[in-house]
Each structure stands twice: as C-alpha cells, then as structure tokens.
Image (cartoon, rainbow, N blue to C red; front, side, top):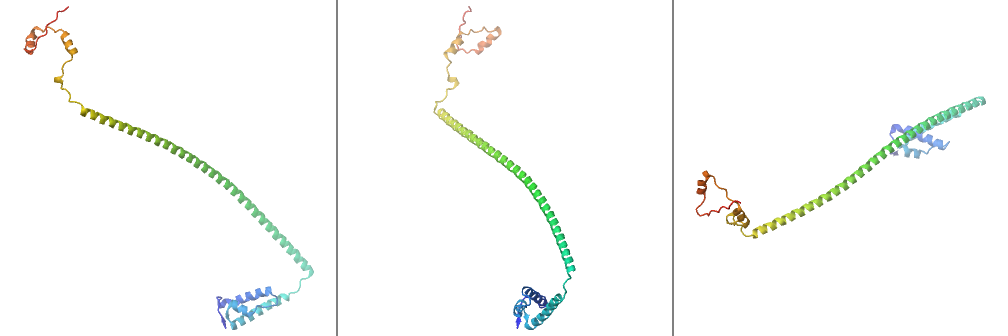
Length: 232
C-alpha cells in the first residue's frame, strides 16, 4: 500500500528521523506508531519500514553512547559549576551592557523624537497662524468687494434713473416743439417802439461834402428824410 504525500522521496529519511526524535523527547522509551509516520511522510510501507528501522538504530546508538559516559568526579563537578556560574555571570553582564546600551539608544531616540516633534509643532503653529491671517484678509477683501459692489449697483441705478429722466425730458421737448406754431421770419418782425424812439432821438450827422452825392444816390426817393433837431 502506498500513501500519497507531498514530501519527496529523497527527503523522507530526514522527515522520519525528525518525527521519531520529537516523539521520543515527548515520550521517553516509546516510538511513534508507523501508521502515523506513514500518514505524515507517505510512500510505500516497505520503504517506510526500512527507513524507520535504520533511524531507530541510529537513535538507540546515540542514547547508548550518552548513557555510557561516566559521571564527573566531585572536584571536576565543582569546577564545572564554578565555570558555569562564571559564564552565566559574564552572559548576564553582557546582557546588562547590551540592555544599558539599548536603553541609552532608546533614550537618545526619544529625545530626538521629542525635539523633532517640538520643531514640527512650531512649524504647524506658524502655518496655522499664517492660514488664519490669510483667511482674515480674504474675509476683509470679500467684505470690501461686497461694499464696492453695492455702491457700484447704487451708482448704476442712479445713472439709469438719470438716463430715464433725460429721455422723458427729451420726449417732452420733442412733443412741445412738434405742437408749437410756425416761427416768424425776421423780415416780418416789426421793430419795437423803444428801438424806433431811439432811432428818432439820435441826431443825424451832416455828410461830408464829397459824400453828399453818394448819400443822395443811396437814399431812395420814397423814404422821407428825418428833420434835423436843433442843437442845444
């Protein structure tokens, strides 16, 4: 009977040895059942039996060699204990040194992190202040623009009203001019009494001898001559 498994054939001896040793540590003087080994490793029963026999012989030989080692004499045992204690102390000191160095390194890292955090906090505070200032300036500019827009709308409304009033006056003047009588020509206008009186009161200058004939020629026969008033 062959059990299918994902373990390659060349790796099965190492896998069987590992399983048997682990089981032997947990259960001294006992072996892992071959069915469980077959299920874990796979392969044919004949090959598994051979590999398990070889592995068991190897493990038993190692256990026999360890058991055949004689016990240490008391003086060597005490020396071994002192040596072990010395090695243990050195290991502890080295661990303390390493731990101290590690603590110092962590403390330095913590201090650096605190310093960097403080710098970052200052940068963030300055950025927040700058942002608040820009926001305040923007709000002021928006308020100013709103006021200017309102004033501009008011002026535009006043301009529209003025244009409407001007158009009404123009329309009214056009209506009045269209309904007025025809204008009198200048030739038909009569001189005012004041102008006639002033013309009569103004004494006429005597013409020069050379200009009398010309004056006579220019005077029409139908126009009466105004009498000269005596000089006072």
